[in-house]
Length: 422
Ligand SMILES: C[S@@+](CC[C@H](N)C(=O)[O-])C[C@H]1O[C@@H](n2cnc3c(N)ncnc32)[C@H](O)[C@@H]1O
Image (cartoon, rainbow, N blue to C red):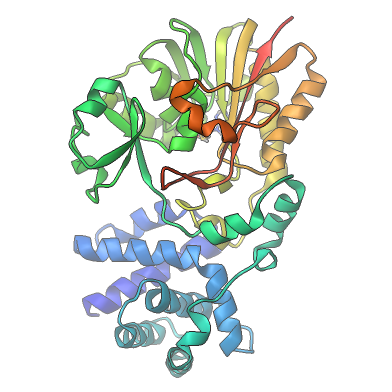
């Protein structure tokens, strides 16, 4: 198999595995490229085509429907969609894409004459497909249901921007490290910046010295806009791989916990690079000893991760929908457990990388109804963050869908601060 066919074959295998086994893209990608003797250029190409095929999968479905009346099997659909993405969205030379897709079709037992004919037909009618528009009803039913349940959500804006490329954003241990940073960047606060460099993360300025970490601007804001009192006893209940914890470790005594050992190992790698050495626990947060009391519990709860759709486009591509019943129950229970672990006047910071009502405001309203000794402390950004005030709701929640800031793309995110007052 020549290199071009091999890269397309790997793309096909990755996409099939993510879809059929409902797995995370990054895990499948890392497994599939090991030992394949690929050039860096091929690895980047595979990554790019896979991410865009997942991102554009709803667009591709509509395009294929225009040209094929019969129902496609999953191998046909994945093969044709990744070819359409290469031609229309990545502007790869069409003849190369058609040839290589036909070669892969022969290898995976999809009728190659059919693939050839469909792609040629699409190429002959390219003006009909290259500006195809999707609308809310083209999305999976579970998404439409969640959106209909989420008040004031601008679905049109989401639909036209969810395919945009995510921006890279770094948070620095302190202002002086950002001032010494050599790569082209735009500051987002005194110790954070959007990066314009195309370099790999681990070859950027002072990565090995542990002066910064990767963290989305939106996910940095809840702790970033809160004036942090020093010397608090803090529990980060769901800490791995660590962004929120790194924001507070310099000034406080923080216990980091996570249920997932693999993610703890990533957390440990990050901590040793950043030269932090906190206590780490590997518990189900629901089993935490209630005799331990903290000034603050950070609960960055497991969720659908819909806010990170630009970085993780597999959410709409996977064969199974997020298990909302299980997630919502866990979010509620972890929040209830957090309330048992704080001192009087202590604070819970609840966060999720989601904007769905069911994972955000509904969880908080439900908690407040059952826990009358808690109240919301409104987010109130200081002058440094005066231009993100529109991301704070009238109730004082931090809530944003995936959006942009200073022309860079940021994730969707939610956070609420709850104060205990017995
Ligand atoms: C949104 S991620 C946390 C991200 C992290 N705070 C950061 O800033 O990098 C949610 C984490 O919750 C962990 N988790 C899920 N269920 C848990 C449980 N019952 N107890 C503790 N951790 C849990 C997952 O392993 C995952 O690492």
